[in-house]
Length: 265
Image (cartoon, rainbow, N blue to C red):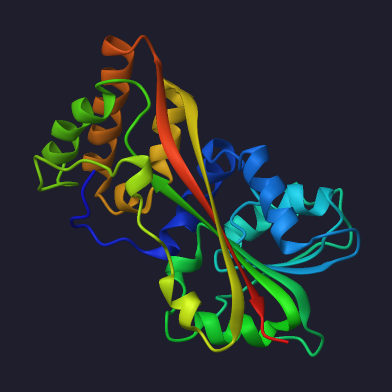
């Protein structure tokens, strides 16, 4: 993959909400456990989640006792999240961009953002997250890196398909090695609203069948930006590659960053 046209748009996820609900797997238990630990989430903790999607992290947080308010830009994604949180009557999902969402009078113990912080206006996100927190509360960000590893040869074999359908213009593109994944949101270390920044990193491969991998790609904002004919052609080519060369099963390797910063007391 390379980062070429078409443009990525955060609104694109709502158009594929059903695929998002079906194919976007939840976060690994090790990652969820670390989020809960560094955020100090316990029974009754008031937690704000920004960009909850269909509830991939929301549900395990609610299961661990968080009193959850989730803000999601996409109405279809939010509808799915409400359905998935149906067993937790105190959980609430509101449709809004975080930038426009009016903060409640009572601050939260935790603000958590999984795979969505990069979509929020960088001029607003840290200051508003700080205002949403009580003093001593925790902002926790989860960021996922695509890294080298997984099924040998698969990534290289996909690159001609990306180039064929206009998703890459770099024939030599490679993801970083796990240990070279970039440090995300270094501005947190200098932000006057936060202190005690912790960074934890987990390298975890994820297993896919042809169906689950192609379904996952359907939810990618870059793929969603293709015209329908090109999008289907791209997905068909990836599916054929996995079926014919990889016996309908591949591994992709990821690094999960958990970044926690304490609101200055």
